[in-house]
Length: 238
Image (cartoon, rainbow, N blue to C red; front, side, top):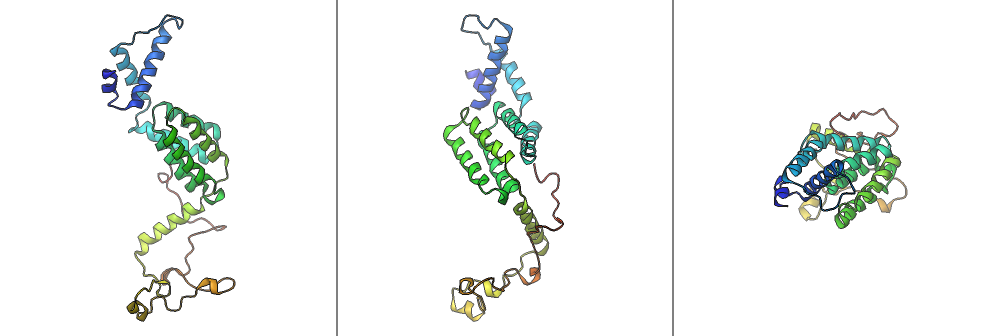
């Protein structure tokens, strides 16, 4: 066990995967009805650990390839591909909480307002994984991934936030209009902070009032029904 712990650098999940691969390898070479116990040598564990590392390096290219495959399968509404890539990651030793965090992001970025139950489900999935842990939480993650793959998709909030980011980077810190500024002191009121603000509940219907900075009065960050002017770069969405 000490040798296995050293090979796995203290990562229990990696150690368990390597041990399982070792046992499977031994069983594949001998009669499965052979009496127990089965002898597992240090050399066998070393070989299995090397194979496990090659199959999935959590800091390497394959880690990012697999999460990208999962994200794109979810976005493409392919439930079968989604749970396949999910399973590949889990059984290679990926942290289930990492996957759960990615599902939370997906629920807002790619599903968004098209299905407002997706985000609470993804958050509940994360919390459930914290409570249950592996291996039992695999079906919880699969449940969430299947729902996210099958549900309606919408990216209007995601794209609106990208437009906001682009605007802030280009325009900088534009001043808050005086009429919607906070005015807790007498001096601020004398400087016309809050002056002319229309308190919406005092009016019936829509109140004609500007909320954006003067330079952005006509700017629309939500662009429903119009030609999209916010292209997503290849590296922006996994």
